[in-house]
Each structure stands twice: as C-alpha cells, then as structure tokens.
Image (cartoon, rainbow, N blue to C red; front, side):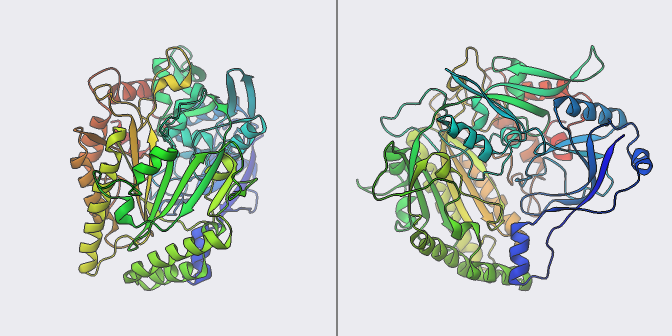
Length: 581
C-alpha cells in the first residue's frame, strides 16, 4: 500500500511588521502534518503509484518566495530504483517530474510561477533519502555522493578524510544535484605563482564530476531506466549541467587534498579604487591586484554606498596569529541574523512602498557589516576550507538577483569590472534623479576559472556543454569568468526595467570581442521591462548563441542529447521548453 501523508508548508505569513519581515525573509517552511487522507482517495488521485514510496501533498517555495505553489504532490524515493519507478509512473500518467532539493534558486527551472494546486507535476524530494556519501578511493581521491546530499554535509565528509575543494558556493544548504544542474561555483583563480592541485578545479562543481547516474529513456525497454555516464561520454557532457532537463541521482567526484584558508574582510577601500579602470598608478588596491596576490576574492557593494565589503581568501597552511581559528562554517552572525535596523528599513520599504529609503538601507547594511566584522571578531578568519567558504544560512535577508558570467582573459578582468560598475553607478544615479530606486540590495562580484576538462584528471574528459564556464574553442585566451550579480528586494518597482538595461549593456558590450556574456542559470536573466525569463531575443537567440563557437559540440548538440534522453519531456518545464523547443 502507498504511505501517504498530507503536508502543508508553513510560510510564516504575518503583516509587514519587523517580525513579519523577518519571518518572510527567513522563509520558515516547516512541513506540518495534517489529517491523513484515506488510502482509497489517494489511490484515486494517483492511480497505480508505485507502492512503498512515501508520497504526500506539499507546497513549493523558491528562495525568495516569488514562485510559490500549494497542493502539489511530492514524493521521497528511498533509493534510485524508486526514482525510476515514479518517473515511469509519471510518464504513463502524462505528468512531469521535478527534482527538488533545497529550492535555493530564483529562476523557474523547477516549476513556473502560477502553478496551480493539483497540477500534474510530481516533486521528487532528493534530500530525504538520496544523501549517501562514501569515499571510493584515496589515490586518486574520489567520492561517491547522492544527489540530495547538502554541500555542507559533503564538504564535512571530505574534511574528515583530509580532502576538500578549491572553491564552493556560499550556501551550505544547496543539494549536490541542484548545484550541478546549474554549474554552481565559488570564487577562485590561481594567484600569481600558484598551480592547480590534483583533484581541484578553479571552475564549477560540474567540472569535478567523473561519472553520473541519471534516469533516461531506453527505447529497447520502452521505459525510463538508470544509466551511468563517465566523463568521456558525449551524452554525459550534456548532463553535467542540465538545468533540470534531466534527473541525476548519484555522482562520483574527483576531489583533492584539503587546504586551510585565511579569509580577511575589509570595508576601507573606496569603490572608485577597487573597481578602477586598469592602467592607473602602481599600488592601487584594485580587485585584480587581490586576485594576483591571493586568487580568491569577493566584493559586496551595497547600493548607494562608497566602500564595498571585500573578502580575500588565501591559502595558509599554518595559523596566522592575527586570525581567529574557526572550526565550523557560517561565521558572520550579523549577516545570518538580520540586524534590527536593516529589518525595520526593509519592512517599511515593502509595507509602505517607501522605496526611496534605498540609500538608507544600503548604508545600514554596510554599517552592519563593518561593525559586525569587528564585534564578532570575523574580519580575519582561518581554518579548514569549508569553514570560510560556507557563510550563508537560510536566515539571511532574501532578495531577488540577476546573474551573468563574463568570459574573458585574466588580463581583462579589471576592465570588465570597471566598465560594469561604472555603468551600474551611472544608471542607478540617473534613476535616483527621477525619484526611482530599483536597487536596494547590492552588487556582488566573484571571479573564477573555466571548466577545463583536464582538471578532472580523467582521460578523454569532456567539458560540461551547458556550463556558463565551458571554455570557448575559438577563444583559447579566455581563461577567466567575472560573475556579476545585482540584488534587490522582491517587488521593488522598476527593478525589471533596470535589470533589462544592465543585461543589454552586458550582451552588447561583451559580445565575443574581448569578452562574452553568458547567463547564470539559477538567477534572473532574459528581462523585459516587466519580467525576467521572458525576452524572446535573449531566450531564443542570445543564450543559445553564447554556447556556440563553431568548433565541437555546443548548445545544439546538448539540446539534441537531452531530447533523446527524455523524448517525452517528463523533465520539461515552461522555461525549459522555450529554451529547448
């Protein structure tokens, strides 16, 4: 018999008091059991559903709450065999299947906004059971992991065995399957004189995959089956970053020796200096200078402020006496728990449409960071890599974000950053002069290497076809990507129009000359003046073109593979069907 539980997501909805804002920002999504429906009723709604699979009603909410749904059917397969069973059930019923991890994303790759209760969509919760992690070998170091394991759990397991990653996304709650689907990344390039260590990459997590197991269509069996692809498999190259157009259940990853990292934060460098155009006097503290020195840097530039929060990581095998030792991640409590003044301002902006307070909110966030770094002794941290790489908890302020990767040569990174930040400042100032404040969050800048398949240390390895970090064969000099994000509170007036201007600037300025713009899959892109993911030219022309270089497989080959492995589009969504018609 089916084990059926009816669940409802509690979203903590309250009026827009400070408490209400904090609850919304934290997105309290505990699943509360309600009355059990009788099994006959469940069997009537889901005829023939595989026995033994936990299935229940569930709500869905993406990271910022702009995409929500209630009353959807969800299930938690206990193993990969049960995943195959529910996929085949969905195919026969004409349903779609959407893997769900932590729902820490912005773009409608899982479900579209407006999905109604009872829609023929089955959510597959990977984080309940598909969480196994085991060390397969030590020389070379290889780990096997289920798609539902969180990055924090994975990195903790690696650390226990003296292993780690060069870089990782900041949120530890991301599931591995979700991170790989959208080529999640951290921030790292080799410092001057630094060489890549075996088992490490300066690219995305997808570039560490040695093999993956996915649910794919098998014509001979006339059914969906499990199939494992190695890194040299042409079909596997399309699955390494699949955008949700497939369902991966398990992977093996090449990993390497762990390092200790020192992370120094500072807020004393003016944006005009940090983001200055190249070619100025020696000794300037530019973003590129920190990359040259340490290879790992991140800038968080709050709107309408002059001093970004700069983090610089450096490899430090021994403890620097000036640093505070950290034995666990998430060491910025002032960021994890929204300060009162920030919550009050943000709550007032939303509740009273007081968007003109954006400059005050930016200043409050910078002050909270500067004071918090000192008060919590967080300005200089040292420890095993994961303890400084992971720093975002679900309780942080939740804002909407756009996202792009600009591929270029290492020598041109500062130029890209200077041009982008100059344009951003000019447009933000122009909007403010008209009484419009489309951005009340921050600009975030990170820099990575590309997904060179040789980093996997596996013969014949292929690059992830749909990774924003896939190298361009026609531009071998491009070895670096500048990741550019702009964040603002959801519902901010004029945000989409502002984002559209930024996107047009990026696409026209970095069009393949000395740099090229690609979208960051999990965030906002494809802007019209009213909405994201809706501009036909971007979806139908600009995005595919950015993955075509005329040499070897690219966008079209990936689309062909994904369609062949899922000809019934069980793993399709409205956005994916527009990208891959």
